[in-house]
Image (tube, rainbow, N blue to C red; front, side):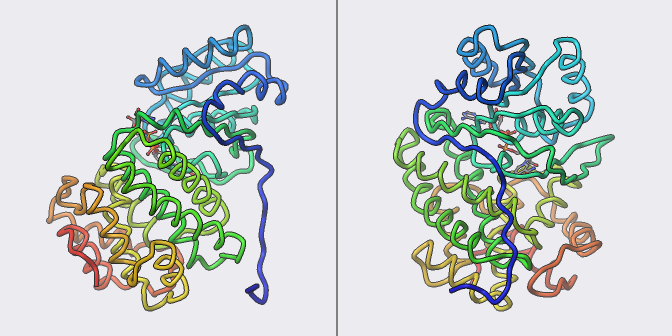
Length: 354
Ligand code: NAD
């Protein structure tokens, strides 16, 4: 059913999806009119960057394999030196959110076209959001310039993603959809994508946990992650993302794993204030209770379920609660310090909601 009034902003991105789609890279570079490309990766994915460069032949002008988590500005400065020295006219990011982030940081400074080949479920490739770290502080910018022009989803590139990271990254994607369903600027189009994304990931993650190289499961997970990324791009995130930014930014907790632990508790916090969203999540997961269903999905796939297991000290919970209620994001349920502290305590202990 259509809501009374809403805004839907489509993004002019080109998306290729399938297995073996890496082979389309030269044709897609040609379509963008790029002849001097910079191939980006993390040190661990250098072999993929080499493979991409071989495919591109003379169009690969340089490789930069030093992308790092949270896009430190000094790494971007090093990459920018290569961009200038080699007269680069476009970038190819092959990797997870960290590599995509570097491509976006270059685009923010140059407006060069970006081609992204995602290897995790983070979803950054669909958004106009860039988080950069300078002097230990992460700040987020939104700018159309950073939205990648072309995304090549190649399911084969995700087959090597280790199971714990696959589950955590998948939960990171689910978090975009769950918060998109109760976002203040949500709309029925993105809600369709959110529910379909949750359905795809909810079905795929247990299959991946049992059989990491299961092609159809990997395909469903990547498809779901793409949809969840579109939802992240189109809606304002709420308490869950605020908590994860606090826990990652001020306590150094790992990005995807923190999302996986916090999501069931953020959903529980909002359950009464956002019944339609919870019904959508429950429907998509095939469960009665959305927060408990999210928790069970994490636990049954063998992922970590508590902040304690992620290395957070109990003594830090009070400061985390203070930071989470300072300058809060909009949320369907009012942000109250006592309730947020209780949420964090449940997440620290890894208690099943409901
Ligand atoms: P990541 O890119 O750092 O990858 C995590 C780890 O997985 C790395 O060690 C990487 O080498 C490894 N890896 C990635 N793909 C692999 C594969 N297929 N096989 C084997 N190993 C693989 O982490 P991430 O979770 O993808 O992204 C997190 C970063 O992205 C954070 O900095 C986060 O803030 C950012 N992010 C940004 C947005 C946005 O819209 N701006 C959205 C989501 C995440």
